[in-house]
Length: 144
Image 1 (cartoon, rainbow, N blue to C red):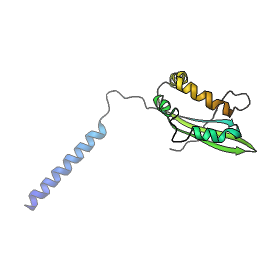
Image 2: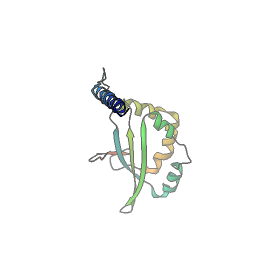
Image 3: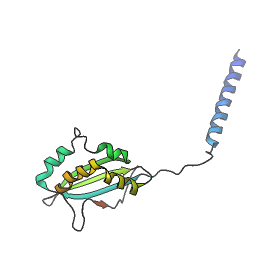
Image 4: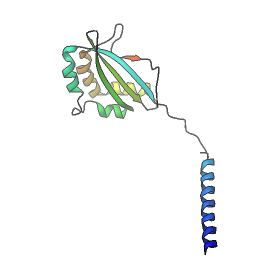
């Protein structure tokens, strides 16, 4: 019986090793391109008198345009506020995970609800000199 048990165990180990080797050697017939996440950081000034109203608009309880952001592959959108030398700034970050960034941004811009949202939010913001709204920042570092 001991001999039989050892033989069964040896066979099981052998089958597991064969299965593992065959799985590691399988190559998909058609490799799909690796999807790249576009990470976007941006900055804009904000009217200090409008900060509380802006915060209320962006509160978790206000659905705003969150579903539209998701629809157009914008995820992990975050906005941070910071006072620098007596002026207030918003720093935004999001990740774009779609395949057609320019097309998705154009479709988002054309959404009637997004247009209404921007009519309310944009006047609260103060673009950097020479800009018309948010200014995209250069990414210099990322740690996965």
